Length: 238
Image 1 (tube, rainbow, N blue to C red):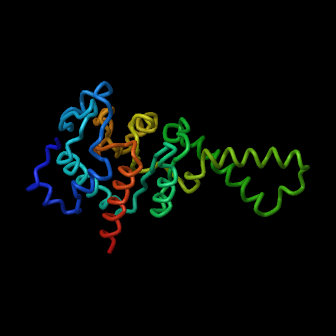
Image 2: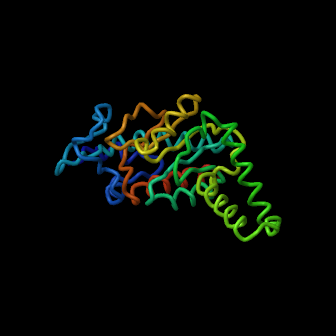
Image 3: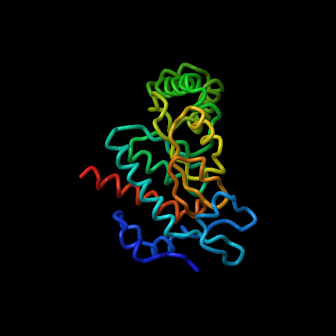
């Protein structure tokens, strides 16, 4: 049973609809055996050994997060979007490119934040190789040498594609799965960078400054969350 009070939900200024949130699966947490103790205040109950997230609590925290996003975008600050699960990679790329923000959707490379000067040099090297290829400057190499360079470019692209325009450390990091991409969260905290995260029932919500208590596995859940953020940001610019 979902512990949701209609009187409070009706006041959602961002149009957060509990029925649509349920349809998208935001309320479905992990198995009880994986529950993080600090997520218990956000759990309404248990069904078939699965934690059911309290959508009233989700709406309360989500609204704070949406307000944060609106303010951040108006101030033209940089948000690094991180989502490396296979099922959300394309959504992450699409949203980040729409926002003109950096992203990581393949694998978090250790040191992106804590060793940024070195990472930036690798990104510049990658961009330089691509530019030379596009200008035909690599045509002088033998077929074997060219194949080796092309492979290196492909490898670098998988690592740094979404970071090409990240000239400095971001002002915030938005992590779609704080357990899978725990290193990204840890690096952000070490550099005093704000963390926004989807908090499923298996993570410590205190790792983030702003949370959205919700299912971080289902594509429908993640898409609902990102669509609401996109909507809030877009409406705030009108």
